[in-house]
Image 1 (spheres, rainbow, N blue to C red):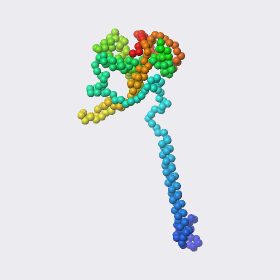
Image 2 (image 1 turned 45 degrees about the vertical axis):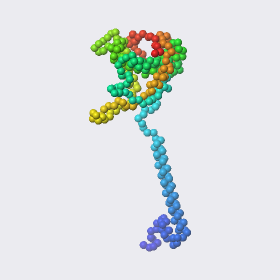
Image 3 (image 1 turned 180 degrees about the vertical axis):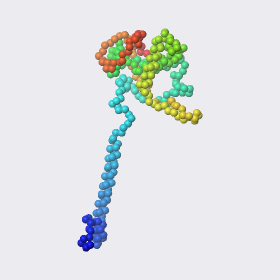
Image 4 (image 1 turned 135 degrees about the vertical axis):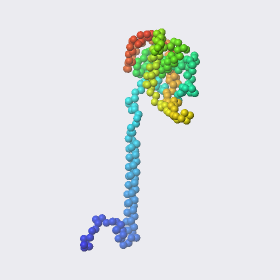
Length: 293
């Protein structure tokens, strides 16, 4: 092969040109070397900056993407209006287990003192609310005769406590003979009202427990003294501060006895009528005055 036909690359290696320079320490060679190094450094720096910027962009975008959770969308949660919602505050409470060594003050024999303790929990529960508050209720309530602009109401927590107290009394019929109820093998016709009342209370409390659905978690813990894990009831609960609800109700107690036989017309529309109760179930009902306590 002749010299003219030898292969020559289309783009020569800059290093070859530098090496071919007869004066490697000359000005032109020195400038070329440093220009090449600076160019390569700038390209490397630019590539690094772009890479970092890309990583930051990806991380930022990932954080902005909403992640699936187990919570129920707020739009699907419905909280009915109550004039006492403003009084609701939460706290963490640990219940008394209720067995020997961890009894509550309410676990004592029936006595006038115990009766007063229970009464003090809810004897102010019948409240008077304003017409503006009454108009926002999901169910219509009645105006209070002789107290213009005010309507009768009761927070269900106080009704629950009333019911639980009646069940407590029925469990000690020797001390509370008026609350002796009929049993499967001992029907007492004279105690019809007490029996029905307690039956209502037990089922009302059942519904209330299922309605509120406490999701606090009872746990099992290992105990060396029995060499087994034992259920533990003294766990933390998220509770509504009961004293705040009591304060709310005490500030709105009835001023005088409520007369349910007086009908007052008003312009409040019942937006969610209560389910009608069969008349036969209330055949023995005789309306009477409701006292402030």
